[in-house]
Image (cartoon, rainbow, N blue to C red; front, top):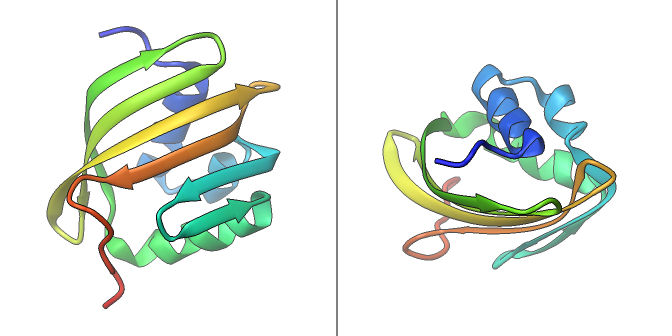
Length: 115
């Protein structure tokens, strides 16, 4: 497998250690995140969204597919959420060594993890 882009490697590390401040530092101040549930704009909105995930017992399992260029990343990963393994897809555009644009979803469609 290709070496991971430093920003993506840092995101995985932060998720595994639960370091929210370091995770937020991987995002560009003008981050826009596109999900089927809507668009998130700015670091504060991204932080608010990520806080919702804290109770979901998220665990990174493995990188299944991965490719990156100098300023783009595309990945397919397996995660565990509330004990259920899911496959997540994501794409990222890097600007100023930070995640500037991203989209993500999980296989099988939108789930309400908080129900």
